[in-house]
Image (cartoon, rainbow, N blue to C red; front, side, top):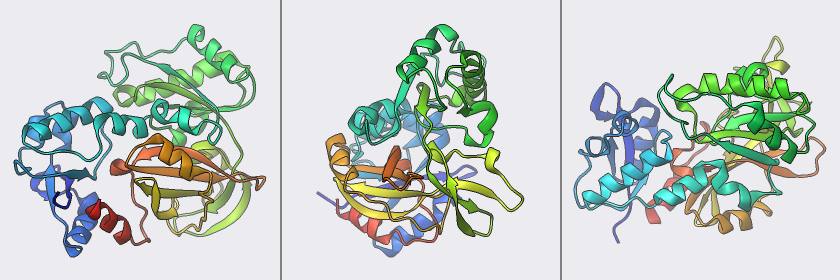
Length: 331
C-alpha cells in the first residue's frame, strides 16, 4: 500500500491554494516528503461532495483528512465521493462519528469523564429558522433527574460548548432550578442555530486546576476550573482569564504519538497521566483520535473532558508535530 496522502482545505477565495490556517502543516508535510491535495470545505458543508473533491487525483489514496470539522453526515458524503474516484479515507464514516460526537465515545469513557446525558434533536444542523429550536421542560426534567437532579452542570451539543457565553449559554449553576436549566439550554440552542451538532448534552460540572492566562501566554495556578475548559468570563480579571489546565494527547492505533498543551493555552505546561486513558482509547477502536484531559483541582487525577477525531483537531502552536505527521505517513 502506498504512503497515505493528506487532504487539506483549499483557500476560500483561491481553490488552488491551501487554507491559510493549514498552510504551515502543508509546508511541514512537504519537508517530510509527504503529499497533499486540496478539497473545498465550503462545498462539503453545502452537500456537494463531488465538487469538493474534484481536484483530488482519481485512483490516489489512502488519505488522511486534516481540516475543519465536518458534520458526520457530510463526512460520510466526503468518503463516498472519494470512493467514486477510487480513493479511501483511513478513518471510516462510522469511526469519525464515534470519535467526533459525544454519544459515540461516552460509553467507553464513562467513569473517566464527567457524567453526561443527551437529548437528540432531529432538526439539529438545519438552516436557521427551519427547525424546532427548543428543548422543553418535559424533555429536560428526565435528563436532569438522570444527573441526580441537583448541582451545577454544563450544556453543550454533541461536539462543542459555548464557553465564551458562559453565564447565558453554557453554565447551569443548579440543576434543581428547572426554569434556569430551560433558559440556558434555549439560549444555547438559539446561538448554535444551524451549527448545532446532533442534540443537547448536559454534563456534570467538575472542579479542575486552572491557571491565570493572558494574551502574553503568562500563567500562574489559581484554584479550580471546569469541564470543557469552560470557566469563561465569570472568572475574568483585568489581566486575563482563569482557564482549566488542559493537555491534548494524539493517538494513532491506540498509542500516544504527541502530547502537548491544549490549543487554547499554547505553551502552558501539562503532563497528563495517560495510564487510565490508554485502554479506553484502544477500546474505542478508532485509528486516529485526540483526548483532551484536565487535572482535578483536588489533585486526585486527570479527567477526559473531550474526545475528538484527530483529523479535525487543532494542533497547538509552539510544539513540533513532525513526529505525529511522520507516524501518519507511515500508517
